[in-house]
Amino acid sequence: MVTDWNRLHILSLADFQPAEYDAVLQTAASFRDVLSRQVKKVPTLQGQVVTTMFFEPSTRTRSSFELAAKRLSADTMNFSPGTSSLSKGETIFDTAKTYWAMGSDIMVVRHGEAGVPHAIAAEMERLGAPVRVLNAGDGQHEHPSQALLDLFTICSLLDEDRPHIASLAGKKIAIVGDILHSRVARSNIWSLTAAGADVYLAAPPTLLPPEFAHLAGDRLLVGWQLEPALEKADFVMTLRLQKERMEQHLLPSLREYHQQFGLTRERLQLCQPHVKVLHPGPVNRGVEISSELMDDPDFSLISQQVTSGVAVRMALLYLIGGGKGNS
Image (cartoon, rainbow, N blue to C red):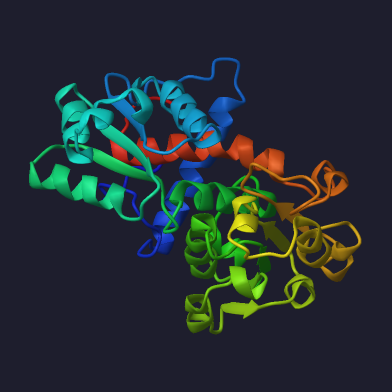
């Protein structure tokens, strides 16, 4: 189990170092083994309190973090904005300070506006509160834990016993879909290029912002057509297309989107024979990906991503929580 960890919060992957990625991967591999046992619980965070502060709706990510905390024997508190004092005029900082006063050690924060987890972390530090903050998704900015579980899923496939980022060097990974609104895409760009992978972004022009073209370089390519992205790709990650984009007139129709950018078995013939497909979920079947391909275990890693999520989030809580104990 990795114990040499100096990062207090996990807010962004922009400044993550290779050793930190490997620390997460190796720790997650240890917890993956724990989750395969009959008794799936360890005392590593016993006595600590993990608060999930989700200011926007989430089922999958929130449930994954809650289960991860419970598997580490932590106590949990849940924040729901619909029934909170926010509706009575309380500020986000006041809410965070209230949970700190109740004994929260780790705050897992999700918010629809970029930068809120960073602001809460800064406020806790200003107050001298020994509270760690983990970004569970902020606006269109980043989603570190999703990118890390994607990384763990891929690296575990390449080396199950010792997942490490060096195994991704030189691999081609296509990220397809709504890049514009995707915090998942942004975090994955940081992690995958840091691992030495070649990342190719593909989306309709209305869903691929100019900022990514400026980032393009040796490890990041950008295009408005699917075929160049898929050609010789080792992995393909397709992103959820939010149907409200239709109301913003960013796409002519969902049917046309699927015809141009939807993943099918036939289209994967452009990729490497061993290609695997990922999706952060939830999936719009028949839009981003065909149902046939999504359910095909020869290609799809989607169920593995969900399983990986608990182990990776256990690892993140453990690392910033300074957990000790047997695993």
